[in-house]
Image 1 (cartoon, helix red, strand yellow):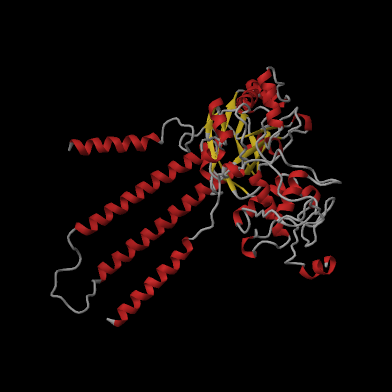
Image 2: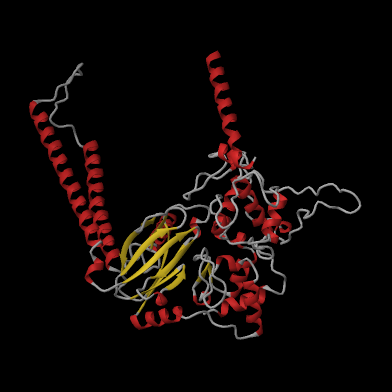
Length: 343
Length: 177
């Protein structure tokens, strides 16, 4: 008995773990879109749970009740139910069928209404547009702006203003990915050669984790992204900081680090605004020091993790496309100093 | 009884046949240290040799006929902007790569040197920056453009306009031979 109770408590604890205020949960919606999806989810859950229970109890009741309507007769080759039984069966089956059709229609209407409501957020309010492009295995994020000099590019992290709708233009450079930040919205595929759109909005400040939800190769599991909602003024400050070119090296070590960066394979793939590094196929590093994570949400952004990532990327994410370079012993430390200084 | 034995043998045969698919091509994700160095002394630049001819240094591409390496080479060919001059094999500013005739030699060692050291009149020297294992991957891919890799190992059709000798075989032969 005690053991059963302990087991039950553990099971309940594990199950409830998914429900609290969490950074990656569709049941903790923080915006109108996810809110609608969550309501739909609970509506389905309760209705279908009720139906499930009714069906199970009806089955148990039918199994255990005494046989009525048919008197116990000597066994015959064929058994014909009485006219009255036949009539009652017809009524019950017809009634259940009609009820089923009505319920299915109710679910269909609820689902279509939600889908329609999800697409109506944007046009009502002034919003911003962000381009998210999937790559194996990281996210390219670009804040569009009519003035080309005010476009902001970052990676694996998206800051959004609280209470303003954000239109995402989703595209992919290689294979099909899917953008999924359950606290904000459902999944939407990123398809090469096609732009998919969706609106998201956050009700209050916070950080939520998103991840790729369409199998995209070896490191699909390590393709995560953080969405950070901030109050308007804080968001604008962040945008201004991101627009600035990279910080100039301020110490001998950082200066040496920049030379290391510019004289190795780094420069072919990565971009650092204000230096000759202009690669476009890997995450923009202009403000890499200001980000939360490295390698698309795989590691917290610390100097040690960055060192491990540069020294042996295949250890952290086997199969990823970062070039392996053998830096001479004295070069890694300055390189880390320089990259971490790029706030 | 005999039927049962026959069925058993058939099942065993089927299992052993499916087991052959376990033989997978090896993907060397983490390049061995010796292949990460950056150098470029693979091919001889002159045919004149003082003191009589020496035997040619034998340089083989470690990535030859490896489908994964060739597809990595294809990706790098885009990433490092080889397409900027050579297009997708057909050539543009730079010479085409789908031919059998090469200005500076078409052996893997020659291609390695061309990439690492550069060539006069436009080919940049990539040595000192691209790790050696990536150079070999690019060499493997460039050789596949010229039809010098096993057909089964070459990447599938890309989204770009790409021509290979296998698709325009007669024309290539007519022009270069």
